[in-house]
Image (cartoon, rainbow, N blue to C red; front, side, top):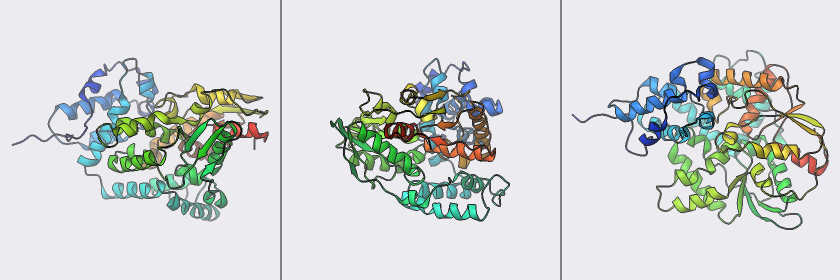
Amino acid sequence: MAKTWAFDAHQPPDQQLVDVCVHCGFCLPTCPTYVLWNEEMDSPRGRILLMNVALEEPGQLSEAMVTHWDRCLGCMACVTSCPSGVEYNKLIEATRPQVERNYKRPFGERAFKRFLFATFSHPGRLRALVPVAVAARRLGLTGNGEGRLKRFPRLHALQGLLPDVRLKAAVTSLPKVIPSQGKRRGLVGMLLGCVQRVFFHDVNAATARVLAAEGFEVFAPRNVRCCGALMLHSGYESEALNLAKKMIEAFKDCDYVAVNAAGCGSSMKDYGHLLSDDKEWAERAEQFSEKVRDVSQLLTSSDPVASRHPVSIRVAYHDACHLAHAQKIRSEPRKLLADIPELELIEPSEWEICCGSAGIYNLLQPEAARDLGRRKAQNLLETDADAIATGNPGCTLQIARYLRDRRQPLPIYHPIELVDRSIRGAGPR
């Protein structure tokens, strides 16, 4: 009888990458789930051990294996802390599609994921949630208390994350082309995004204004709806790659592609690797990924053109994991903020620990995300800052939710919003 293996032959985790891990333990203090539970199998080296078992020993994927991999946030803090250079990001990204192809999840779990992908990756559908969120707040279905959805943890987590967005902002669109001011530096494609476009239109508007003020012509097509990051980080590989190809085609004539959402930028910079075995798209994907820049990365790569005016505010900066760990971008957003006159930048403790957002992790693993969200909110409040800055919409939603729960809300800015206010002389809101 032929042996049964947990992983199929299509791009399983690379055994050579698995073997790089020497189980030294440097990753443990930075792994959010290990910090919470002190459980070996919920650490990076424990999950790598399970990958090795699946690669070397015949058998099927067990519920325990899948549970420990599912509990991983994919924050990549372990990659930053690893002295051996273990590419855990590539290992977990190869493992998750294997799970989705070879493990039968309960129907309810599959249906909930499909609902999330069918909603959050479609801006038009996501906009339909805005009046629902407004109505829910007026009816008292949301807030700090137990809430009427408490019996349904994932739905309860979803309603708790919905921001207090204005209906007008949710349906407002940017022009497709925003001309540069002064000497033209180049054509920059700008990803409007899904959550960013609907819930954080002001961030997109500020991004376009700053890029134009710094001499870039901005190309912001509305028909590019999603980069595929949510699906990619959840193991739905084929759907993510189809969206990636549309993205590559849409921005093919741009000099750069600017991204103001850390999770999106991380995935887009990885298209070259993800499509490396596709003969038709491999070269185009590699060229595209080389053009992708986080907006802070793009703006700090050359001297500023537009004058900065004072913004008198004390700001605690939160490192989004897919910016700091996945893209290795920490100094650039800090430089943007430090260049604003009279702005004081404050560093919170445990910068390397994830806030618990991690794409849709806070909806799929609400208990762990709650504990991490509370921890992050406490660390940020202890800075006594006037406001918080972070470069990812998921982090903004997560942190805002747990600040509300503590009844200590603070304004949360994207760094580009503060730069925009400085250029316009608007001051903090």
